View (cartoon, one colour):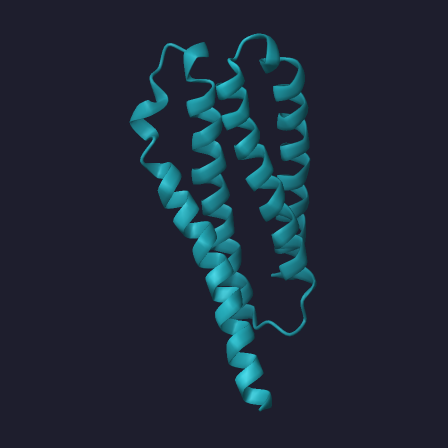
Length: 131
């Protein structure tokens, strides 16, 4: 599981950098300031969670079950949250109206929050064992 966490974190990080550069250079000319800001929010949250996956992959005190749960919550959370934000921010550039998938953004956000919640719960649980 650690290899999967680390490699997915690295891939998410690499993609975030590519999309951030694409947004700063290519999209800057075709999106409004508000749309570009929205796009950058997706990039920022993707990068935060890329680093989060790498952190989780290096933690030896977490069970495999906890790591697996966090992995899947973050993976789908990033795809739903950041992915939908990218599509919604660039909606004006396509003929398809991506507003119909806007409902997945808060679902993705909930998944990301849940991953952090599991980590918090695990910390609290392990602290109680030591007392």
